[in-house]
Image 1 (cartoon, rainbow, N blue to C red):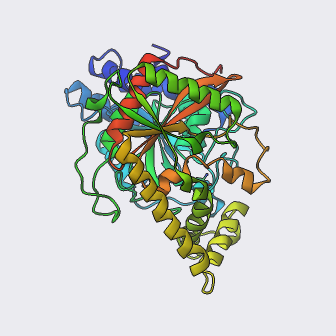
Image 2 (cartoon, rainbow, N blue to C red; image 1 turned 180 degrees about the horizontal axis):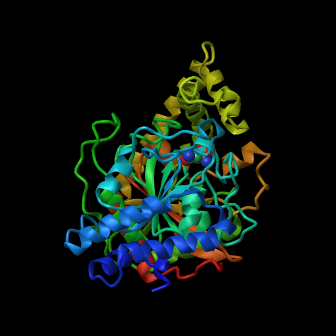
Image 3 (cartoon, rainbow, N blue to C red; image 1 turned 120 degrees about the vertical axis):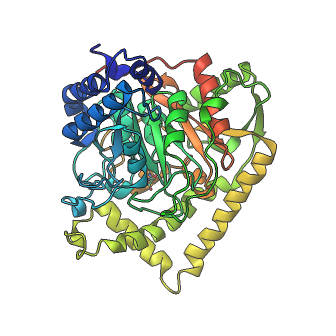
Length: 470
Ligand code: GLN
């Protein structure tokens, strides 16, 4: 009973249903684990123990009356601290919000509360989601559970490290240019960013609104399917959320890939990608073929423009979104912003200024359309596209911190997906020198089912059973 924290979401839900253990026991096990392990990792900015116990008690009551509301009822989860929670401090990893107690909750959190899920805490992140290592948090450095001298990736580094270290059963992150997938890759867990508009972003503190999307981080692909279903769906409070039925993603999970066409863009394995990452990904391709997939070589030449386009569009939107922190309504003054946030506000204001708008923002917006079209035409030929999630293995804390350009390049394989608005998942596919490598599977708009099926079939046939030693 002591090891309940190790369970997957599916296993935990089954245990609750058959009354093998209670939500209170499961929650206690997770909270004890946090107490023991998190001082080494630094995943959490806030542990919400008393809230968790109240929610667990409520869940146990429902379960005893055989009123399980969803797979998430009674299951402990962690929430990235950029998603607002009524009466629970939400900082976005920034000093400017160090005493911000939101007066309302994000739709995602309301949905989870409505299903009697159990919040164990709010997780660390790069300030307002800006970064790829979680080192830009104004509060603490989160360590990679596989090697405590390495970064967990970012910006949802706290959420990803928490799952790798079994400090929650699943977690919620947000992904503007890779922030769910890249830390999931670096921490050896599963991270899914759905189609733009699939999950309500009401109450997600905005970074770059045409790119932001909430996503799930889990221990395996099956759990990602279960969690995604429960938090997806239309919300009239988010004007970008789309009125489209949420499929039962579990139904897509089959353990072979017969007939599936997987596109392999050569740009995803170009020279910037670490040779050992490349080898691991190529081995995964061979494995995918063995379980029935057909690999098709592709070229997406516009991908080389993606980083440049992203680092014009994203800061432009950042500069507009950060204007709400004007030092009047949210307490602290603007000098409290960290250097990366300031850098992006300046870049964005410049790109949008009259005289430069046409040369920078407008041009970037046009190339963005071309990137999107390139994906669209690729998906006329293939079902999914695969490649690495991160071009590099987890890097050392401090290694890239002083070089923003090096840090930006960590996202080279994830940002095209946000620019196109399509869904993608990262799953662990092996270890190199004891550090995890993530395989990224990208789908066409609304094809979460296909990427989940690909991920599920892969992990069923080639399970990733390694765990960090903690
Ligand atoms: N690392 C990327 C950036 O710094 C992506 C961040 C994100 O997805 N929130 O912008």
